[in-house]
Amino acid sequence: MLKQKVLGNRNSGGRSGSLRKSRDFRLHSSDYNELVLTYFSTLDSPVALSCAILFAHGENDQLVQKEVRPVDYIDEASFFADFAAISFLRKNSSLKTTIDTKEMALQSFRNCENVCKAANTRLRPDSHEQPSLCDHTVLSIARGKISRILGAFDVDDMLDSCSFGPGSSLSIKGDAANLPNKFDVERDITRDAYDLFGAVMTEAYPSWDAFKQPLFR
Image (cartoon, rainbow, N blue to C red; front, side, top):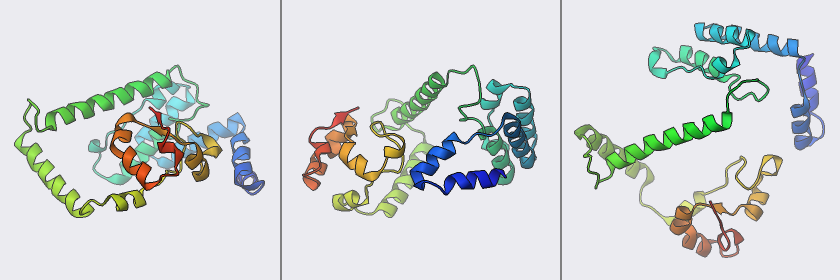
């Protein structure tokens, strides 16, 4: 019955209509809880069991903050099952928690940026902190592989390979995130990217207004 209802929503009103109807589709709370617990049960792992217990007792803060590390596993299947368990409800907006998700996302972003900054600082040729012999070896091998794969740089080939992604952006959200709208509206670009590619893009696409009046981020 549940499958029939979902398929019924998908097959009416075109793509945008089916998307709206699927967003409006709601399970009864008892069916929702049963679905979640059944999913955890099918994963059949200790981590999935702990997730089921936390969900059943309303310990949602602990549930969405559970972590697993690939280095702790000896086979892929076990990791995939546990990772699926901790990820299943992590982005479910209907799951009530006391966590400030916006601040957590910003803090995670800052932490990742700090890690990248430290690595960039350490590996720069003019860095006071000299890379180790291992760093030099790894970088040299990586440069060689990248060079062989990419070959000689050609700006025309690069431009021909560029395209918009399928998702939302800072300017366009939801169903409006399609290629025609992005060509008409999308003007977001960082200052560094514009300084690097602005002149090339303006010459390559002289009628594209996005590079005549960019919106710097």
